[in-house]
Length: 144
Image (cartoon, rainbow, N blue to C red):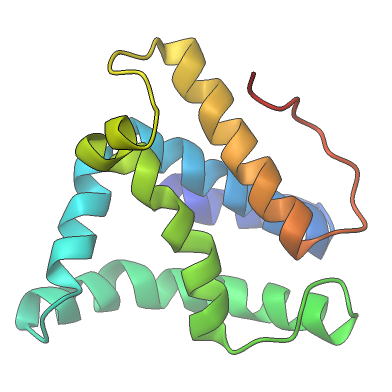
């Protein structure tokens, strides 16, 4: 959370901040897959634990990025969609990097080096960003 919110304090424009948020989110998700599994599991039930996760993490994070996203939507830089749709577009792709069993079944090698993880999360971020910010120039090479 600190790393994600830290991306918002730089002097970059909104598109650059949004790109950095996505990149950091995927990188951090790949480093701590158990956190994504916890959020996924807790999101299935209306509970005090889900309220806690939302109140402490999801809500504050969305509150910080929503103005950036809204300005990008207003400028026609990213598609105008409801925030829950954008949230799904950003968080859904984290499934395979953080869920080992499905990842292996869809073709990921069982043991990845730290460099392989880094390349995969960069490629994932690039793929999502190309869809959300199509006028931008890719900065990370695709994973081979």
